[in-house]
Amino acid sequence: MIAVVQRVSRASVSVEEAGYRADIGRGLVVLLGVEKGDERRQADWLAGKVARLRIFADDAGLMNRSIIDIGGEALVVSQFTLAGDCRKGNRPSFDRAAPPEVAESLYEYYVQRLRDVEGVPTRTGVFRAMMAVELVNDGPVTLMITTADMPR
Image 1 (cartoon, helix red, strand yellow):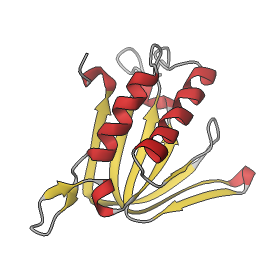
Image 2 (tube, helix red, strand yellow):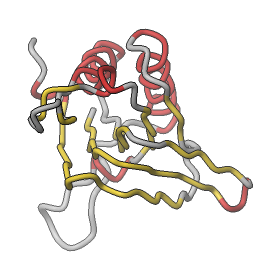
Image 3 (cartoon, helix red, strand yellow):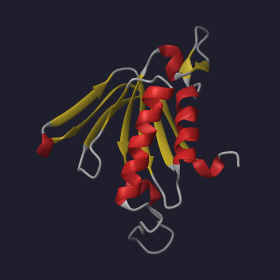
Image 4 (cartoon, one colour):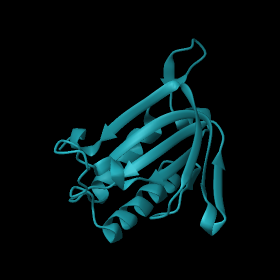
């Protein structure tokens, strides 16, 4: 799994065709890509890592607080293009991306894990939809986390 995590002061995602919109205030936007071979253990680890990332300022202005510590919200948006391989040619290959059925199941599991186990109020995009994501990146602070880095 690959997550691009952005600290935000506010964010939203909308799907015009479905009349759908989700908004959050201060917190994190997580763009989540699921790759072939990913399993629930990767989602468990990644949800814990994101929930405990100390990237919010403490009273001294240092990045020492997590989204849990500040009572923030998360907006999780599926993004299979994170599994894109741009090494050859000019058209990305998405061979590393998990099939949609597998990816959707793990995406939903990740969201559930973030909400129910980690206790982070979480809104989502719409899986497999064309979405418009708007955000105000706070800092800016943007990190990429991949489960390839997780302990074995």
